[in-house]
Length: 294
Image: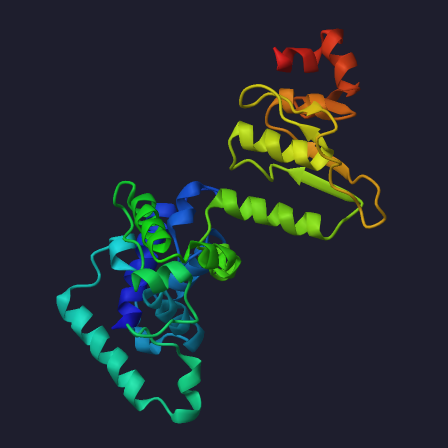
């Protein structure tokens, strides 16, 4: 049954991911369970252990049913969907399509070869499916093929203009960790706040990308190789508040060089504040900040 499949999925996920930190990149591969939900599923499995699943509480059965409905065999590769189950799923799909009450037919947008599926992204509609996970460079190769087809049909401008309508998934599950961090920062900037505090909020990005983003925020231009500090300049006015003034930016930087673009640096050692001042002053002082730069 689907509940039994849900139990196998939950058991496997807890065994594989149960001891990992919540920000581990492996969680990006999960589409049916988040890191925050793992403790809930562990507690649920303890409650239903040793009893028939039909006797489990309705809430626990709903949790188990949700897992297989989001499971994708070619992506998650737990060996749970064989040919017999595939045939039963296709048959269930057809039955649902045929027996759904007319007043509810608009609740489900079925895939049809001759129609756009409004509930799916443009890429999924073009492919009439999803890119198989686990094939080397598969997504990139597929994107190149799609681009060639769009260019041939003179559709690239139309599709690119509608790119912002692409589905990100519930809670951004279809985005990478780096993409989610960029979007979270973008949402904060849209509010035009007086202060923005970034505490490891760009940790998923490489050093060059972090430098570029910080340079844009503070109105500076990037200099040098990846990881170098952005240098103050007039290339950009920086992000402004609703009143037009500069936004106050507090950032826990992963590299001391990125701190050179800021007005003030706080240097910590063993959890204690040891230096506080302008970066150019601390750089020549020969203290903790200078050692970090070195």
